[in-house]
Image (cartoon, rainbow, N blue to C red; front, side, top):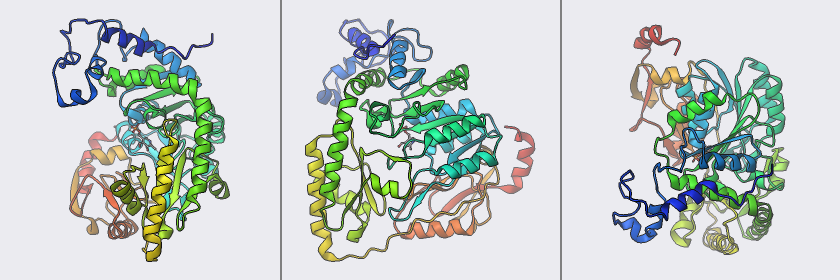
Length: 496
Ligand SMILES: Cc1ncc(COP(=O)(O)O)c(C=O)c1O
């Protein structure tokens, strides 16, 4: 039977409760807005009245049977899926749940090297063995991007025992790998397909966008509705289809990492965002794409600044591109994306999504208005007027990428005995932490990989070029496995 997407079962029941003047002798302690605070002065009491915990009638996220179940059914229908799980811990939680529910310790998963850190954490928690596919490296834009089909195919053929393939649909920059072909091939080899759709929640609602993971036949996908669809930050979903999904295991994994007090505000925001995108997305997304297209044309009139379009990605044989993202190359002005990101915020009150050495990225949604895009064009013109006459020549770091050799699984390295050494002395040691560089955002090394001379040189290079280095250890030190004690330790924990 066709679903009625005008309905918002969870939000409607929550509103009913908020308006019912029920006396609260339960948590939360703000008693539905009876403690005044600074935030309430700004938001008013209504936000607090909607922040209920678990009153009768509002169902239970751990095992939904009432209004949450109904909201999930509508969500699944909207996303072309068989089942949907509402998440209050972002797609971070979705990725942890997918990988942990599919991979047992020592089972292989094929995934791109430029995965979000939640995927690396899921490898640590599950004990799975990563088979990394090198992403496409774009030297023109200085970014790591999609996976090429042939690279994934090779990984599948080389690892017929792999349990799963994970695909980012799309990358942060909006580029989609050929998810349909990869999914078909993975299924032929009896592998389950997981999608990270943190940046692709809107795909299902317009045929002018890349194909969604569910439409492409993937088994599971996690979508950050908060990023591109309009629900509140941290609200995401996990959608599934087909016989490969073990729902008992998936449910128990989700419940393991889900708070027992999930935010009703986040859940309600998913319910209402689903209604809006389902009813309005098919008309508004094409309008948004046209607005973005016109904006790119205007940006391309500006000296030294270049908006990247779909043709650019077609020319480098990327499968597809999400045109609701605006990538602007600014490095021809002799400044970095970071400089422009800062300038746009400090001087023009524009907050961008992201900067890299060569580019800046604006993420649009059906909430984006023409005046917002006009402000971007105007401000970029002013940035060009300021920097172009200076004829600056900033030396930009070249994107570099050397594949470190894996010595042991991330989980084993995470739990192994450790010691801390100065980075320069860590050559040939086994990393016990991830070291990530922004840009390009790929972990140079993850727990269990051997730190090569190349990695130390890359780190030095990025440090000197002013990139941000993310790791657990500070002050020029790195956490490595203490091999001497590890041998003994391994005898005890080998099968974890
Ligand atoms: C590619 C990718 N995957 C997953 C995530 C995690 O999503 P969330 O912020 O919803 O937890 C992000 C967050 O930025 C991301 O960029």
